[in-house]
Image 1 (cartoon, helix red, strand yellow):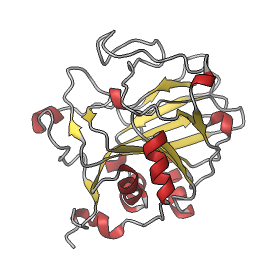
Image 2 (cartoon, rainbow, N blue to C red):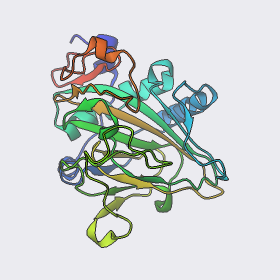
Image 3 (spheres, rainbow, N blue to C red):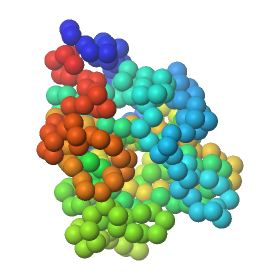
Image 4 (cartoon, one colour):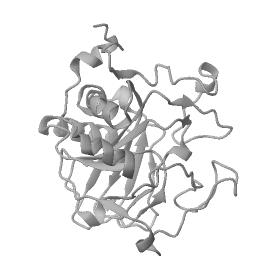
Length: 284
């Protein structure tokens, strides 16, 4: 077996039920109980604390100045954070991704840190992820992985089946500006919370070791956290066989400066930034 970086040899397996794969295809979001081991959860928690102490230039505070808590995000630090790298490349996540995406190959796309400190009121509004990105294709999966217990009122919520193809206008969370696609070029988000009977929602309380997996086009949102709760979440994102570089004329979120000089529009995401970490034939 030729395994570049040794990822294929080291990745841990996880038994993925067939009905979970079917649920992912139908609903665009599933829960995975115990997908990370206690040791991996501890490793990830240590990686999060390292990230918070050593933020990247992409780090931002997404909560309002008057918020009693603090919502911190950071992106694309896995290559410089050994704990993140180990979980993204050596845990069960690459193999699970292949099953959920029905893909023969799996590439790392990027990581995303989301920490809501105690008392944070800032909600995460309804949105899809893929319109913010520089990638096209249907074979993809994101994981939302808490290292703290998350009750229903603070977990991630999804609109079941919303990954079916419709792209909604991505807007800034604070002031609702259209900075990615020209205003009017994509459909506006429906009033999900005003008409809950029209939108079947999925949500799960989570314990450390659990994760939710969702498609990059699945609409999702979350609320704030209570005064005694800290919600540290790591998100790992992967790409499958049909992922292609989508060159944008604007700054994507996250940005990948200089990538368009190496990858043409429509090219496979074959770049050192996006290493292949799993393949069905064991060769990566």
